[in-house]
Image 1 (tube, rainbow, N blue to C red):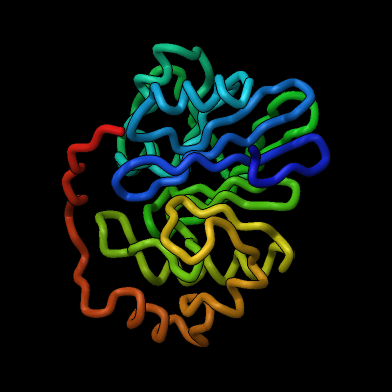
Image 2: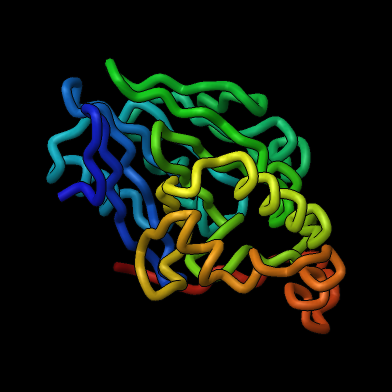
Length: 234
């Protein structure tokens, strides 16, 4: 069953892959249409979940270009002919290409069915073009913000100073009751609220950017590559 269901829309989490990725089905209940966020690891499992939920995939949304968030996109497109959205700064940074790629700008919206409008928010720090997807009363944060954590900033393109500004902007601009849907199952609960994170997330409690950078980097130096993808089958 969906993890959330309000005003004709719903959010469903699918936990998949060796790094505990969340793939999201964000849907419009009357039309049974969904956007898939960050399809990775095993397209047949994602398609089977769509069939189980009795929904039609209408769009693919990418929070960023790291392989553990996009490595099922091309295979999925062999079964569904839908647009793939990624922010322009991420496309420019990564060179990501696929069929049906829609290069988007911060503030662009994606409509799914009758009730669902999803807004693309530029939330850099983990990568230069990382995107969070704003829903009516929720936000899908990818690798920007986790439950009681935040994304790494030592991979190529990461920047802890930018991440600090991004996190501060999120908690300053969004309502405290906003439900947060992270990109990985790295915390004590699969979802949370921004209010709870202001209380429990140590990365949101640093008073200065210097304190945050020292904590986030913790002696790490920037890398020029990502770790190799592990072999994995469901």
